[in-house]
Length: 256
Length: 295
Image 1 (tube, rainbow over the protein chains, first blue to last red):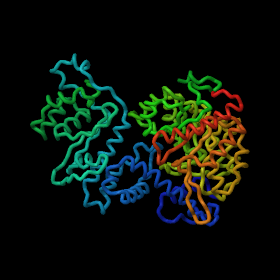
Image 2: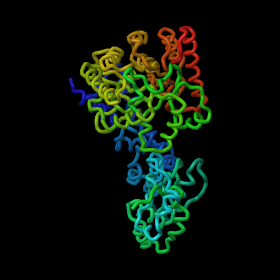
Image 3: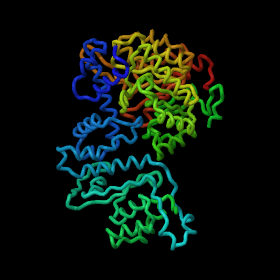
Image 4: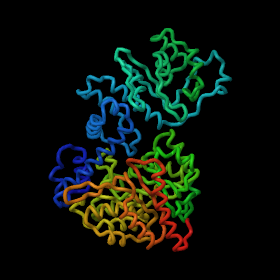
């Protein structure tokens, strides 16, 4: 008799495979002439349960490629990258890169970046909570020392920097499909995904705002982040950025 | 929050012997706005293991008005691999924060490697797996400092190695580990139908004093020529046969906290609520007959 570990692994291998279940496993299953069909209920559940989790996370990709193609992609993804976590909340992290590697999708090179927005949306949704930086916390900080401090973006923040107009593609595919024509020649887009309170926000931003937030998120001081940003965007308007975002929940703390 | 659990095992908000519903995100808003007359709600704790965000916020609001049950799907009690301490810590954090009246897990396994099937795979009903699952249930209970309930599975195949009938294995696992039983009547119906077992034999092997909760759900039928395989997909109303088995069960034994599970093709809230009211009506009839109090 095979040890339990071997039997369970045999079952798992067959669950994940697309070939007919091996004889060694079938020999372990009571046979009423339907043991393959009975086993296939489990194989189907494995693909459908995890594939549905993927569909929940990537509704725009599903809309763009169509239900049938999405089902095939999800099946292949579940087999290649089975869930590594006991919770399914963030299952599908590798899906954007997976899409990039599918030869049939090479005509739609923007899909991976659209998928990155969708992953970021769910990750931001489940990210830890943080309170909004408010005016009182800033009051006693002398203006001349502010450059040496660190502004903490909300822990839910994610950045997407794409060569394609993926913000528009994502936005017109919220809800019912629209007839908008989007040309890939429109150019790239820079996106910040963040959940300042309850609602996840997907913001299309300028390159300066993206660079500045990225630098702050990687623990640079305000002064250093600003200097870095000016290197690629010389006309970045810091005052305007702060007027709009310093107290809108984009940040949760200011620290030495 | 250990102080809210006394040595008799009573908890801050016990789950009443009423009908409850599986809590679904698409219903959060309706529940918060309407505060429907439902005895309690049940969640899969794995869906609340994020670091923060709206789900935990909604759960907190709903928990303020209703008792709660945690029905875990991720412990994989029957796996040859050890129980994951990290998962237990996350489970314990939810138990401490939300003070559920009941905690339950399945008589099944879901991982053979480092990855998870997220489906509930049937056990090999042998002495070896019985000892293993008892050890794992004890570990979970010791870690949580609480008794848990074990749910009978629905299954589509049986292993040749099986040497113990499922209902005997199920009851024995609970008795040896000091756990209680969650009887899923739909699962009993599905498995007995799929394997040609006797429903009466199955249910009469279950000692009522160990039963802490009942589950009811819908299933679908897969047509395989002469054989019809019943698939437990929780995607439709409870079928007539299962309602009848449920009525018979509570008529014979008295009321038990009863959950309506609806996890796929989830309807709008009123349809789920109708099913809950249906179960509540049967419970009320039984309460009247036995002159029972609700809690």
